[in-house]
Image 1 (cartoon, rainbow, N blue to C red):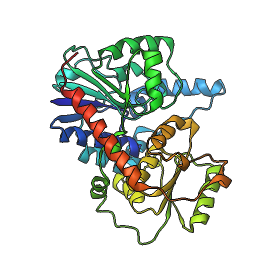
Image 2: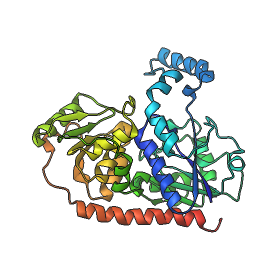
Image 3: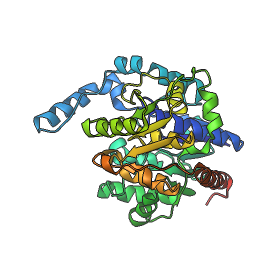
Length: 364
């Protein structure tokens, strides 16, 4: 089967890029041909800049905290390394779409479309949220599957009109899965559908697979505490310094998604070589688990705390969650990685079975 994957734009987010790569690899292992339908934010196209500029100026005049995005040529230069990985490692459409065209299924001869993962169902990250419920897909015969779709938060952020439209569109899906337990309740209450919880796609691949991706990166020669904190502030810096002092490790703060200075391979290697990780990133937490490294996750309410709770509760690692004000509550204790890895293996098996079952099952 030829399967289209629809996710957030693959530009400046390491975790977002790797979840799409992992989902492609998993679908390939099931004997299918995946292709990612590349989406694009408006600010990467100059023709939208007059409208973008006008909206930002109005927002500033109203006293709202609004910033101009990077100019397209600046973004292209800055994200050169991540885009190399996308080009070399991910099968994708040549075209990149701001709005999904209705002929996309026929153009790419798709038998199915999988929506996910990442926060694809969060309106603040999708100007036209109905795209992520396949509003552009008019072919009744095509399989529609949501894999590990995430709302990002445990509250409902859709408008009444968005809710009504998405509630109708989701009835056409053959399989619905979400990344967080809270997503099951949101689907039931607001969209009138049943969903199951599955693993983030990055957890569908083994540690060995990620090690092979970054095998060309020279391993670190000394131990360090990896600090991967996209939303750094003084409180979080104090947490990192306190843990580093307790563990007697030097701090290596590697670049965040917004800078994208590291290649994807170097980003993975930063987790591979760490002796300890402190992060406020969901995928930073995921890769700490993948490489079985001791870690703490600083809960980031602005980026969606429910994602962390659902992930860590699944693996019995809730004691690894800390808030930036809880420096004094940091506890010692080793993680039982044998137990974690057994849970991971079982959850991986069940998640892959969900994909396989809903891609080849009878249409409606």
